[in-house]
Image 1 (cartoon, rainbow, N blue to C red):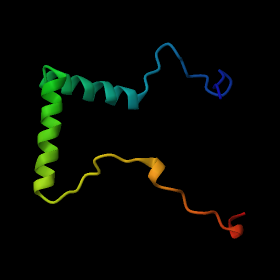
Image 2: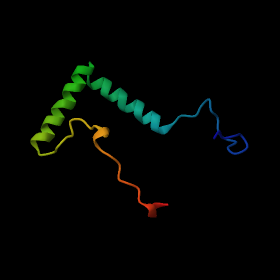
Image 3: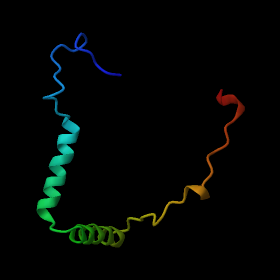
Image 4: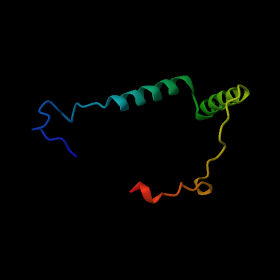
Length: 78
């Protein structure tokens, strides 16, 4: 639903910035500054995952939704 000038007279779509997107852009810039290549970033994530595994945190290697069926809907759920 689009906002109209009548509902928000101070809104200017030309100068509006989304704070959530701005934070995402900032995080992306920080990651890009820290790691020169995607391989370096992947190695960093993999090392963190290995550290977590040593500390007892379990990871699901692959989730296959076809192996899991949703619970049956009962007649009382109407």
